[in-house]
Length: 281
Image 1 (cartoon, rainbow, N blue to C red):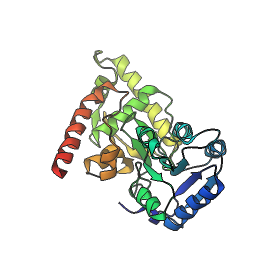
Image 2 (image 1 turned 30 degrees about the horizontal axis):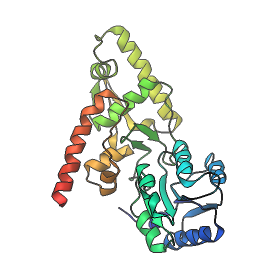
Image 3 (image 1 turned 120 degrees about the vertical axis):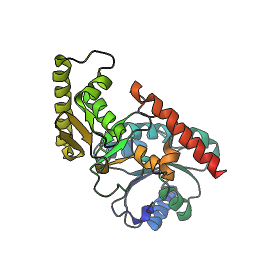
Image 4 (image 1 turned 60 degrees about the vertical axis):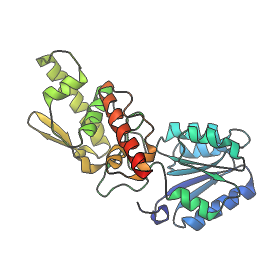
């Protein structure tokens, strides 16, 4: 994986209510990643206001701040941008357990150094560099979510349209017949003409959402079947299957948790994870 200092358009925020500590943090980030766009804030509320309209790939957050502390700020940031990498910065090591329980990307002890910042940027939980030719970012670990390249969540107008897209992601480019899709989306209900018409509405809704984000090309349709162009999405699940170490570390035992048909994949991924750990020991 390319190191983060090679990413020209990396967007970073740094939040600390102590001016001297904030200055040292920003200088260490800039030394490590001179081409990055860095926004600094002495208040968590200012950072939240910025993120309502601004973009952030990595957030360096002091934990022990006045007003809103770093842990609560992290929760707010995740609500705004679930793909933002959280790196906690503090002089109090006892916060490590709380920070890591939030599935943070990393943890840095003060006084901050450029070497510590570099180590975190080179091993981010959510990779910032998308694979060439990808038009969407997809998260399968935890709840299934879809994002634009800038990390903006994509909202499907129909829940079933989102589930349909999730199933196509799971199938990894294999063509799915209309009957197969109906069996997944409608479970044990008998296939009928009424179901077929409803499924066509779901497919149409999914395509409308993708077109709105210039991503219709990720779907390949032919007579009576549909497939995902899996080379057009950057996906944590696909990275995991390629044995990408950060993606393996990002897996915490949950896969598309809102869909019952995806449950068996968790066992498969668990076996791969445990096998990989056994092989490394």
